Structures are given as structure tokens and as C-alpha cells.
Length: 305
Image 1 (cartoon, one colour):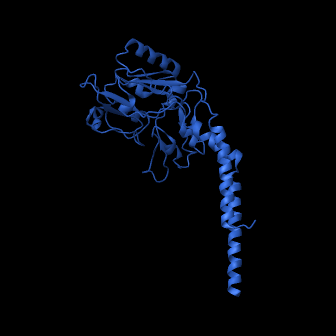
Image 2 (cartoon, helix red, strand yellow; image 1 turned 90 degrees about the vertical axis):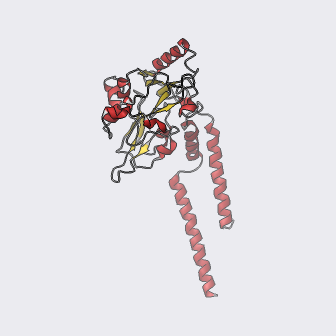
Image 3 (cartoon, rainbow, N blue to C red; image 1 turned 30 degrees about the vertical axis):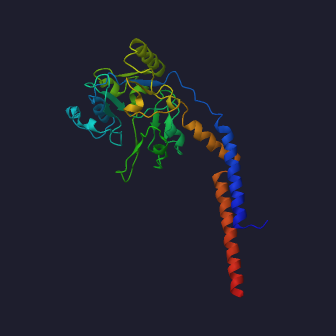
């Protein structure tokens, strides 16, 4: 068969289709990764939170982020707009209308959810993000990070933030779950410790879920019958109770299947059924050389004519 551009495209298309088809066979065979009973969790009761923003202040203080005096966080004008965590603030509080009591709005704390099967960890190509199997914390190692920001694209909660202002040593920043405290001392994260109304409860994830169910059973008129984070995307370490649908309060609605269960089987299947990238590049390089050689030969023959 003559090696021309049409035949080359036919061959590469067929090979790619075969590799992806082989990968697709394994996609639906995935299952949730096991959840350790020792992993920690936090329950956020949005019906109790008063929006004092003390959690924002102490988070900045604990993580050595740009900060202001505590009294500055009494400013409620920030609730006029919905905010998101960024490289200089690992957690923020937003407020939403409370149809049951308009004078007392719902306050919702936002931070990294520390997923049980994190998409950011799966997407990181150098292992800068890992899931600590002792505490359940999603950890970040800046020394390994190459700044590809795949974690930012992969995170369904849109949490990881990049230090674009730092030209020399930029990092990906997010909530650390106060890892040093909970891993060595078993002490609650700073935001939980400072909460004046105990809207945040820290403990083993399995105990947190029990507490959440007890609250819903005790006051069914106060809460909707759903623990956000129990099953979403395979489950998260941070979970929420609310008095209205969470998608109406800035929390995105997801199914139960974790993101890596879609992406990892496809990636593994392509490598298993197709060819490694270095082989692919070598093959394409060889094809380019053949085409260039053929073009040079035709040019020489045309010149002699």
C-alpha cells in the first residue's frame, strides 16, 4: 500500500479508535474507593451559622495569609456578592435568603471539600497532590508542583487557586484542613475551634454522619432530608446540613460517582490498548520524516524536468 496522507490518516484514525474503544470497555467497571473509618470530617450546619466570619480570620492567621484585625471581619457588606476562596483566602462565607425566616439568612462556609476520591489528586501528573490515608486530608507539596494547573481544571468544586502574582515561586493554594493540628494533636481545625455558635463540628467522618442524621431526625422541619457531601462525587470530608436545597445556596449539585472513576479507566485503557506516548511520538516523527523525504524527492525530480 502506498504511504500517502490519505492512508496515513486512515491508519491513525483506526488505531486511535481501537485504543479508545478498548478503554471504554473498562470505564463502566469502576467502583468507589474505600473510605477509611479513621478519616476526619466537619459538619457545617448552615441553619446555625451567623456569618460572623471569624472562621475567615483564623484561617488567614493559621496559614500566614494576608490578614486584618478581627474586628474588620464584622463587615457584612461583603455578603452583597457571592465570593470564592482564592490564593489569599482559603475559606469564605456567603449568605443566602432564608424563606422560613427572612430576618435570619443562611450563611454558607466554602473551602476545599477534601474529597474521598479527589479529582485534583487524579489529575496531578507529578504527585504534588495526595490523599493522606490517615486523616483523609488532600495534601499539597509545592516542591513537586510544576504549575500545570490541571488540578484547577479537574476540581468540580472550583477550589484550587494559583498565585499568579508570584512570578518566581507560584503555588497552588487551598484549605489545608489544618493538617498539622489534626494529624499530630488530634485538635480541630482553627475554623472549627473559633466558631462561637458551634455551627462547625469536627470529628471522625462516620461520627459526623451519625450526628447529622440525629439532627435531621430530631428537627425534621428545620432541615431538608439530605447531607450534602455524604455521597456527592464519592463523598467528601466537609458535609453540610441546610434548610433549603443546597444548589440554591452556592453548592453545586452532583451525582454520587467520583470524577476519577470516569477519567482514570479511560486513561489506563488507552495506555493498555494503544501505545505509550513516547512510542506514539516516535511513530509520528518517522511518518513526518518519510513525507519530508518524499517531498524532497519530488522536488528534485521536478527540478530535473
